Structures are given as structure tokens and as C-alpha cells.
Image (cartoon, rainbow, N blue to C red; front, top):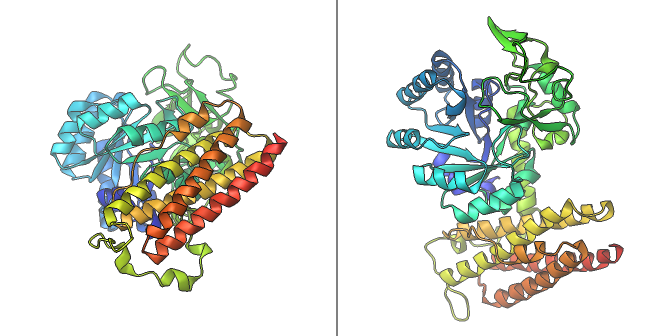
Length: 490
């Protein structure tokens, strides 16, 4: 059912869906990791600064419950070096499959983990960090946009950072930063990511170890509820920024975060929780939760209820498939009539007048590069559009996301590699500050794309692909007419 979502990174991580749950400190423990894994996703245990016996206990519990593919999230910069070494040694002794690192790119540690056979995942906030992680030997990158909840390293929005990392790095890239639902997953896949990393949405699940107060605040919040601040700083390097729900601390009602004695506002067992610390409210805590760090990404306004993690994974996947696939728009008899042999990597489609497999893959990748450019332009332009046009531009963006998915799956189904590039349309379009001019330019290029599809169709032997490309052509023709009519209102 969800085969359209599968990407090569799934084989590396050992999951069937490219839905990854962030290693949220304290919040992501064995119940959440197990539920996500059972639903087909992949999840990290959030073990930042946690004692070794907790790591051992969490890993043991997962394995007793049959979970053998998972990760552990560690942050060297926020951990005492002695404890960090104990954590690393424990993870290696336990043969933890994957370790996620954040904030710094510790080359020696990455090399050590890689030599031990551990999959190394590095979350980065800019291109410089990404290149350093690749040189150090990381297997996977997470592109973290500034929209993300919790600690945020970079300052680029995900829609700008993600295409840059996808184009300039050879490693598979996962996308993080305000992702909540299947539309978000479909969008980042269309921009070249191999999966999405979700945080806030999974805090509001039954299995998350977050305190009920934190979960309730998430579902009560709107789209403008978060702020980026350095006021929650105890336990992390000075100047580390976090995205949280606005509260009495961020409003300045609790005093100067960097002056005066430490004030205890809660406890986890006998461990005190200090005002201005980076601790978020956990199920095991007591205290003044309102004044704690209530981590949340910019997408929090779309979190409306507390659900099971399995239900959330299923909903995200189903929504993304609906956006990325045209199968729900095509009669079942037509879909089933496609010959499976046409999607074999071992069959060359070369036949009199038809493109060979390599020629077809080249043509499909060129369409994908153009389609991805259009999708990126419409996503960026939607935020600039007046209210009466924003909905239309987002609907067109969703159409473009769908065609990116269709093209990617057609390429992967033929044993090809989907291009990581975008064509020149994006930079040319975004250089036009006037929205009406940009939409006109995009429409001109949309017409060119339509002609390229028309020229390609007679050379495509596979009936199923022919049908999908025809639908893509019709969709672009329809959207071009809608944009022409709407431009009169600008």
C-alpha cells in the first residue's frame, strides 16, 4: 500500500517507511520507538546526558519486544566528556544499529562509530556542517530547518536548506523542521529528501514520555505559538537556540535567564529541575511545568489531538501516498493492466521508435529536475501571496509534489537513480521579486514543460507510464489556465 514512499535510505535503516522519529531527549523512549518501528517507521531513543544504565535498560527492553532496528541520539557538546565516553562504549557494547549526532561534527567519534559498523546519522543546519559530516564518514544527513522544535543549529528555512544539501552532497538526506503530516512528507520527498524526521507530532502521542501537560499545550497551540530563544540554556553551550512554546520565561516574567542563583522549579526523582534549564516536562517529573522548555516546531498548529504512534505513522503515510500517487485518480482496471515487466531494471525498453531504458531514465530525470524546481518556487511563493491566491498556489504545489513522486517512482522502479538536481528555473523565477512576474515566468516554463512531455509521449512504450505522463501534461495545462486567470487579481 505504501510502496510509493519507499526510498533507498529505508534499506539502510531497516524500515519500510521513510518516516523517522527524532531522538527527542527524555521524550523518545522504548514505548514510542517500539510503536513507530512496528508501524514501519524508524525511531531514535533520546538519550542525551542519560546515565548508562538507562541506555542499557531501554535497549534491552526494545530487543525483548522484538525491535532490532532503532537508533540512539547523543549530543557530545551537551554531555560531560566522561559520561559521553561511557554512553558511546555502552552503545558499542550493545551493538546499537544507528547513532545520531547533533550540534558538532566530531570527526574522531564518527570514524570510531563507523569502524564499529554503526550507522552514523548527523543532523546539520548548513552546508558547511553537511560537507564536514560527509568527509568524516557519516552515512546519513538530517537537514534541520530553523522551523524545528527543540534545539536549532542553523538559520535557514528547510525549503532553502534541503535542496542545497540534496544537490551538493552524495549522502542520503532526511528532512527535519516543522514536519507534522503527510503533506509535509510528500513535500520534502519532492524536494529530494529520502525521508522526513518528525518530532512535535510524536510528542503528542500516547506512547511519548512527555508529561500530559506538554501534550495538552501542543494540541491547544496555534501556528504562531512558538518562539526561538536562548533563555533555556542550562546544560547546553551558551548561545544555543531552542524553539519552544511561548511562556512566562520567554515573555520575560521570570527574570534574567543569565543572572542570579539557580532556582529549582521541579524534580525528576531526586534530580532538581532548574528554571532556564533545557529540561522539558516528562512523565516522571513534578513541578512548575509552565516555566519549563515546552519544545515545539512551527507546525504545532496542525497538531489537534493525542493519538497512538501507530495511527500517526499510518495517517502520515496514507496522506503522503495520496499526494504523491495518481493511482487514486485512475480506474483500478487501468492501473492493474500495466505489465510488471515494464518496471524491471533488467529489461531494455528499446524497440523500434521507442526510447531505450537509459534514454528514458535520462528524460524522466530531466522532467524531475524541472518539476522539482516548479514545486520549490510555488512553495516559496505561497507565503508571499495574498490570501485569495495562497490556496490556489498551494494546490498547484501539491500537484507538482505529486508529479515529483510519480517521476521518482518511475525512475526507481526501472532501477535508475533519481536526480538530486533542480534546473535553472528556480533561481530565475525567484530573482523576480514581483509575484505576478514570477507566476508569469513560471507559466511560460510550464508551457515549455508541457511541450517536453508531449514530445516524449510517442517514444514511451509502457502504457502505464504513458498514461501517467499524459495526466501530468493535462494537470500542467489546467494549472496554467488557473494561474492566467488568477493573475488578473494581482
